[in-house]
Every structure is written in structure tokens, then in C-alpha cells.
Amino acid sequence: MADNTRKDPKDWVSGDDPMTGAQESYLKTLAEQAHQDLPEEELTKAEASELIDKMRQKAGLEQ
Image 1 (tube, rainbow, N blue to C red):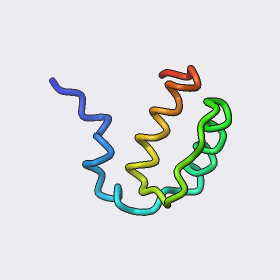
Image 2: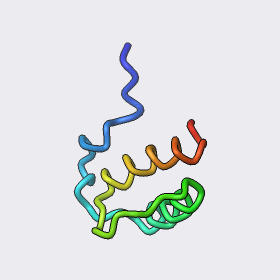
Image 3: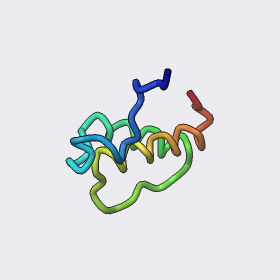
Image 4: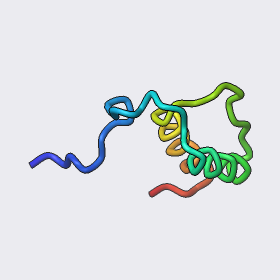
């Protein structure tokens, strides 16, 4: 049986909505830990989720 508990952010119904305050705050923290700059443009929820995953890897916080 396939694991449907984690949807690709591109498939989220609300994926095109602006990122949440929690996502923005977490991204700022991760960017500091990973020594990365955040994009200057506003991100969608889906884009923020994907960037969080990438930043977690760069910061050494893989799941």
C-alpha cells in the first residue's frame, strides 16, 4: 500500500497561498544555521515547504 500521508507540496490545494508566518520564521532560523540567504520574493506555501527541506539538509538537520 502506498504511503499517502505526505503529499508533494505541488499537489497541495493551498500550495499557491502565501507562506505562513511559521514557515517564514522557521526559514529565517534555518537560513542562519545553513549560512544561506533567503529569496527576496514572496514564497508560496509549497515553495516555502520545499525550501525548508533544502535548508534543513544544508543545516545538517535531515529528518
